[in-house]
Image 1 (cartoon, rainbow, N blue to C red):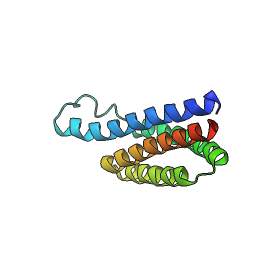
Image 2: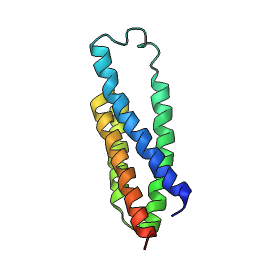
Image 3: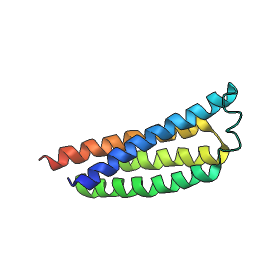
Image 4: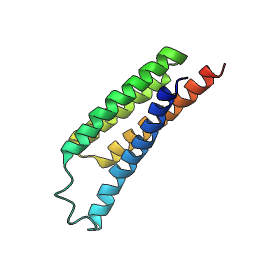
Length: 121
């Protein structure tokens, strides 16, 4: 397995995990009044941009993985995770976005493990 493909999954795992934490932290902080000065600073354009960049990176990672190890399960996690993220993003449902982010992170981890197992044989 090339180091680049491995790094994409690791970066995807980290960023998706941070996304899930971010999506859960925003409503908690807002409900406790901890982000009074940041409410106007949180633009959804940033969320949408990160969504599309993540979609392209994760899509290429999963596609390369499926071509290598021929296991389609990561693609199902990718579709479901980004589906939840997209619906959550349009409906401002942070819990749904957190679940989607966690699912995408898990999918990256699963794809990473499949790639390592395939390439060590």
